[in-house]
Image (cartoon, rainbow, N blue to C red; front, top):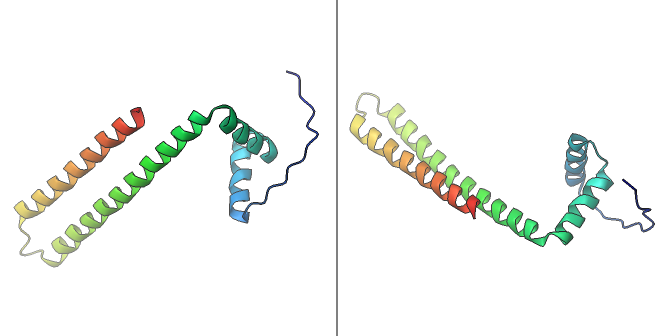
Amino acid sequence: MERKKKDVVFRVRFAKESYEHLKKVASERGIGTADLVRDLVLKGIRDPEHCRACRRSFAVVVDLKRELNAIGRNLNQIARWVNTQKDKADAVKVMLLLSEIRRGIERLESRYDSEVAE
């Protein structure tokens, strides 16, 4: 494969954390940071649909994370209630709450599957 001469320098500033992340990703891929940035930028220009798909996938992940955090809070509330009411714990009520959480997780799974498939 013939390498094209790169005669234009384009400087970009990054926050230290972002640059460290770029270095890590580049190292994992066995390439330099400049090659990584060049590949990512040119891929986005040549294939803008890829960038749109990445943004859609990222939005789905953000929404799922928010909903999973809410489920986690519900689980913590149930655990706190059970731990404070050990002698009075109504097993049926706890089972209903856990069943509701399970249904929420199943809804998230099916939503994630359908949104990622798009």
